[in-house]
Length: 232
Image 1 (cartoon, rainbow, N blue to C red):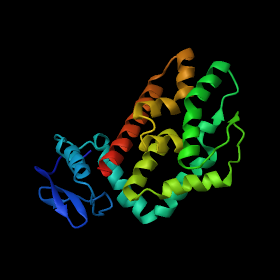
Image 2: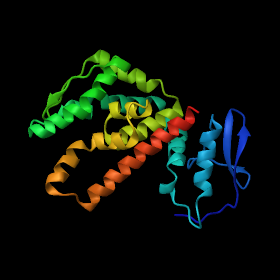
Image 3: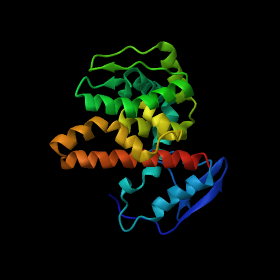
Image 4: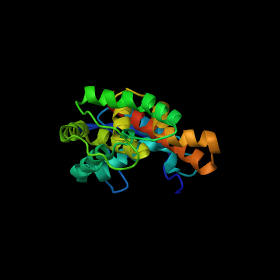
């Protein structure tokens, strides 16, 4: 954690968009790449994160800046690799793997998960097959290609948000639904936590699990807000 080294934060118009400036100097990513935002509201939100820092800079309180940096340092130079990584989540989509028992959990998964799979089938023409247990289920190739196409449709900034949301919950379908406003951030978190929450209701929560749930929810919220600001 470093000390705050700047006094003023501003948003300046730059060729191709808007930049955040610290004491008049344009902000760069950790890898020293320029950060240019196509929409002023997104630049202003990132600027607000920097302006809210006190004596010490706490990166965990700047999720939008983190996503922007991911886009510049990881997505832009390795877009194809990021797309490959996200598309692979479709092969083992979390929502397709259902519990075998107890019946109450099976019913809850069907109620919460199947509507999202049905949505993906209509929205992207990506119908995925479900299975019970942990044995892998091969998904239809046309559906996997369709999901890859959905991932490829995002620009670098949007792809960084999708990456955060997908990694947070381990579900590509949930992440896509989140960024498409099919599901709200809190509900998205509860969706991927469904089985853990069911078990916790029986055996009790532990502090690490509670902390992880909160982190997942915050990551979903940040990814959604970033894309909303990006779309203006």
